[in-house]
Image (cartoon, rainbow, N blue to C red; front, side):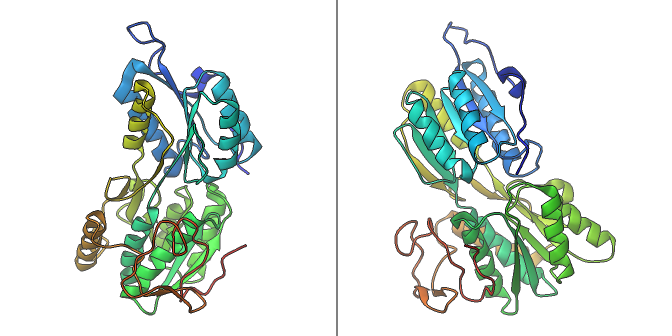
Length: 366
C-alpha cells in the first residue's frame, strides 16, 4: 500500500495558475488525484505533464490542485471529497482502482464533473477515458522478439485487469510472430508503483534468463536493475512505461510507450469553461496521439527499427489492428478467426479481456 502524501492545503498541493480572472470571475478549479508521486518518471509523471499543460493553456482562467500518492480505496474517496468541498469544478481521478470511489463521491456532488481514467463506470457527472496502450505493447513485442538472444522476455505486470492482460497478449502475439521460439515469463507485482518490488521482479526475471524486460508498472526501477545487470556484464534491454524514461537511453531503454494526456485534459477543461461538458467515454490511441512511441534508439538494429516504424504507421492510419485473427485463446479455442479483428466491447471485445492467448504458459491470477 502506498503511503498517502498529505499536504497542508490546496496551495501546498499544487501550483496555482491564478487567484482570479481579470474580468472578476472566479477561475475554474481543476483537481487531479494521482496514484503515484509526480516524480515517478512514468504514469503519474505524464498525468502531471497534462496538468502543467492545462496551466499553460488557460493561465489565470484555471486554478489547479493535485494530491499525489493516494492509495486506491477509502483514502481516495476522502481526497476526492475534500477536493469537491474545497470548490473543485472538475476532478480527474487517474487510476483504475479509483473507479468506485469516483462514482461514490460524484453521487454526493452532482454539480462537480469527474473524469476517471481507465475505468468503465459512468454517471451523468462522470466521464471515463483511457488509451489503447495495447497498440504500443504490440510495437514493443515486435521489437523485443527480434532483439532477444535468450528467447526469454520478462514482463512485470501490475494487477490482473483487462488493461494489463491486453498488454501482455499484444506484446506476446507480436513477439511470437517474429520469433517462434520466444517465451514470456510474467511476474505480478500487485502494485502500480513500488520501486523496490519492481526492481526485485526485474532482477528475478533477469536471473531466469530474460534479456528483455517489459513492464506495466510505473517506476524506472526495472531500468535501473537492467542497467546494473549490464554493468555486471549482462545484456538486458528495457522499454519505458507511460513516459520516455530517456535517462536510461540508449541502453538499457531502447524505446518507450508515452501516454500523452495533455490534449484530452485541455479539451475537457475547456468544456467546463464554456459549459459544454457532458459525460463521455473516450478510448483513443496512436491515431489521436494519446499513445506515442518514443525514440527507437540505435541499440535497435536498423531493419528492426524500420519494421517497427512501419507497424506504428499502419496502426496510426487504421490499416492494422494489433488483435487481428487468427488468434486462439490459451486453451486452443478460437478467439478471432482469420482476418477478424477484436471489437472494443461484446463477446470478442477487448474492454473485458480476461484470458491469455495461446502460447502463454502462465495462468491469469483470479
